[in-house]
Length: 247
Image (cartoon, rainbow, N blue to C red; front, side):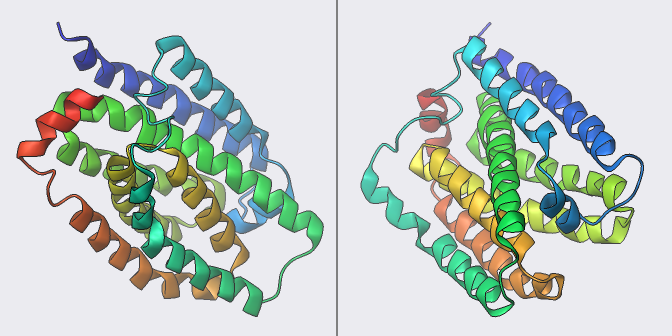
């Protein structure tokens, strides 16, 4: 049996364990009381995210999957120009944050640390381990959709923390579109590192913006999703096998 074929069930097992950390850690953090995500991220360091990062890096090291999950430098630094659309979106979000005033230094530092850990943990899991497993068995194109759908669906679980199921559905949609274009960047750049940074900055700025601006980000999410699909236009058929061999 091809060893790479085994990576999909292995990645699923890792995902289930990681997800259990998310659920149990989140419920322990809120101590049975519903709280808005913004308040949770601003209030205290979420040490459960640190546990998840340690778990994932340990698994990746044990399986020797570092290059396979994208923890390596880009093949061509010239490809970094592909980052300009998300960079413009981040600039827009930064302008919103500056317009609505920055929080205290303490809150700002907590948000920066928490969102950095979230970005590392989620990217290692979805665009790293889960994407590698899915692409090994189903090909690059299907792996993009599989990981994006799972990534979006997981965010519905935020309702366990917030108690707001409707809001979690909107978050799931945002996350699903986010999963499409970040997976596209991970493929085209052949590295996960810039995607981790983008994810961190996106979450950090999103949490710092006032909630009334959430819908203002929807057009950016949709445009970036279309951009991601455009980046993947040559990977639907013939180049899937070639790219799969690179993993």
